[in-house]
Each structure stands twice: as C-alpha cells, then as structure tokens.
Length: 565
Image (cartoon, rainbow, N blue to C red; front, side, top):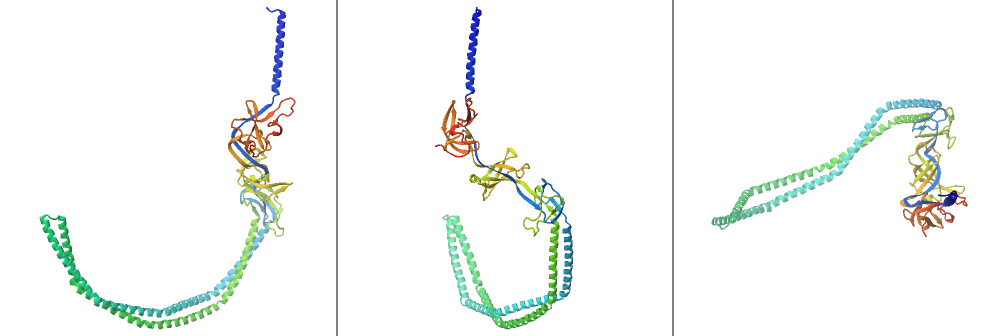
C-alpha cells in the first residue's frame, strides 16, 4: 500500500507528464497553425471562351422628334412621357381656325371655276354638234374614196398580168390536151391491146400447164406415190390459173370499148381547153376597163378632199370655244390644288404617331404656341418639337471598341451583354454594324460597334450603361485549368502540380486563354492537381495570400496564346 509520500511523488510525476504533453501539443498546434495553406484545382475538361470587352449605352431602334407641319396653339396634348403609342395614334391637336378658313375659301373658288367650265362646255356643244357631224361625214367619204382609188389602182396594175397569165395557161392546157389525144391514138391503144393479148396468152399457157400438173398429181395420188398435200397444191394451182384465164378473157372482150371511151374523153378535153383559150383572149378588154376605173376613183378622191377641207374650215369657231374651255379647266386645276393644299394644312393640325413606340420626352404642354415644321423662312430644323418618340421594339448597344481589339470583332458575332442596372443577368445579342470611321477621344482611338439585343424587355431604357463581351473564340471539351494557376515568364508558361504532397514545377503549352480558365494543349492530363494560390500564415508575413507561387512568376492574369519552349 502506497504511503502518503509515494502518492505525492506519483501525483507530481503525473502533473509533470501532463505539462510536458500539453507543451508538446501546444507546439504542434502552433506549428500547424503557421503552416501555409495551398489552394488547388483539378485539371478537367470544359469550355474556354475568349472575349473582348467594350462599354456603351443602350439605344432604341429609332428616335424621332415629332413636330407639327401646322403652326398655332396646342389645343390638346394626348400623351405623356412613357406613353406607349401605336402607328396613327393621336399625339396632339393644333388650333385649326386659320386652316379651316383657308379651306372654305379655296372650296368656294373651286365651285366658281367648275361652273365656268360647265357654261363654256355647253356653249361649245351647242355650236359644234352640227359641224362635227359634217366633218365626220366628209372624213368618212374621203377615206372611202381613197380606199376605192387604191383598189382600182391595184386592179389596174394587176389586170394585164392576170390576162396574160390566163392566156398562157389556157394555151398550155390546150397543147397538153392535144398531145394527150395524139399519144393515146398513136401508142396507147395498140400498146394496151398488145399487153392484154400477151396477158391472155400467158394465162392460157399457165392453165394448160396447171391442168397437166393436176392430172399427173391426181394419177400419182391415186397410185399412192404422192401425198394428199402435194395433190391439193396442184389442184389449187390449177384453179388459180383458171381464174386468171377468166380474167384475161374478160379484159380481152372489153378492150375495144375501154379505149374508145378514152379517146372520146381526150377529144372532149381538147375541145374544152380550146374554148377556154378563146375566152381568155376575149377578156383582154378588162385592161382598159380597169384604167377607166382608176381615173374615176381619182376624181372622187379630189372631190371628197375638197368637201373635208370645207367642213374643217367651218370648225375653227369650235376650236376657239375649246380653247376657252381649256383655260377654264386650267383654273379648276389650280383651284383644286389650292383646296387639296388647304385640306392638307387642316390635316396637319392633327399630329399622329408615324409609327409605334414610346414617348421618351415631352417638349410642350397644352396651350403652347408652336411654329410649323415646314416654315420656309426658318431654314433647316425649323419648327417646334412636340415629343420625342422611340421605337423600343428592338434595342441596341452602341459600344466603343478599342482599336487593338477591333480585329476580333465581326458582323454577326455573338455577344454577352451585362447591363449595369441588372448586374445578375446576362443578355444575349449579336454585332449588326461596325462603323468605318474611328473616334479619337483624349488620345484613345475606338471604333463604334452596334450590337442588337435579343428579346429586349421593358426594363431596358435608352441611355443605360452596358458592357459587351464579344465572343472572339470558343473551344469545348478541352483540358482547362483556372487562369490563376498559369505562370508566365518571358513567354514560357508553367504550372505547379501537387503530387503526393509535393509541389512539382511543370512546363505546359496553352491554347485559348479565357476570362476564367485557360486551355492546356500539352503538359497536363485530366485529374492532375494544380496549385492556384499559396497562403503563408507565419507571423512574420503580413499579407494574407499571394497569387500563384509568388515572386516573378506570378499568375498569368489576362488572356493570350502561347506555347511550351
């Protein structure tokens, strides 16, 4: 059993041990608390986007200062700032008193001018009806006489040739008929008779030969030396020869009657053509008759022309009346133009929206006296503006792009847009215009670029500040690391890889350097751990963190393209 002394010794030893352990734990904790913190990121596949940024202001599709083409007092102002209007909607009404008075006076003058035209026209009609009819009849008679003359001259010119041609044709027909008759008498009858007799003799010889062959084949068939087919063929040949013999005999019996009929027909043709020839020669008198027709037709034309000239001479008074009517009509045209102009001026007192939009500004109030926007004495920009109207159906950002970045901007390029009033939302758009002229402000050269916003809404107000991020380049499904992990030293890029608790310096080749991540082309593989920052917590260090590994090879920062050397 322990004594009191021993207990005290043991208690003291225990206290010492606890103190030693506490000191060791405190030292270890202090060492751990002062160790640097290493922040890392994993190499993985993702998307890299390189952008060019530029700031600008929101603008509507169009803005117009709406003016009145009529001067006077504004009796009604139907809109206010922020009012949404449609095309043709009433904006304001100007006092119409002066315009209405001018319209009434112009209409009265037009009525008087129309009455004068009617009076002059009735007088001319009464005086000219009979004369017009006479001129028309004389004109018709003259034209008819000219047509008859033309026909007579044509027939007179053609008739001699027709007569000569008819005689020549009749003579030719007569000669051909005579030749045909002689040919028929000399060669036709004997030759035809000879051909028929020759055909008869050939048919007679053929039937005798066919009969002998038929008798022989029948005898051989009866004795069984030939086939029934051979016998039938011989019999068929005999019957055919017999039919041809009958036909030849028939032609022999009628040959004389046929050729007598041909000779009579040829003789009749000769008589007919001789009579036609004599008739053609007797028609030669038509040549003189046609010449007499031409002389009579020319006399008729001269007579009709004299009658037409007399009728036209009597119509001069009608021409004078017509000139009076034309003068009155000219006055009507002038008065009508005055009425139309007065009506237009009256319509100008009603100011309507030329297109749909939103009222951005209001320049006047009801009761204000405004001047006409078409005043010839006030020069360019004349007239008092009533309201400013903007078309907000399409919204644009007019951004100022630095000249060093303009090469990366193109028409149709997609753009991410940040509006200062709505910092948590990114809007989409595209480049629609790149100005050809630069702008220099305080020795800074920029190029205005117009960006159209997709699907604008009512929150967007003209004049709001916006930042456009032009997507210059994009790659998907590539190895990426945070941009702060890249160190750049004279164009040589490297990263610090954390492997089994050790930091290893490794050269890499990069591709696109985006806003937040950078593409790794060579030097890393998916899943590697790279150091993005080292935080030193030792008491002697006063700064909380250092970018990358610190020193001259700090984080890369901006975008760019480089490679491993």
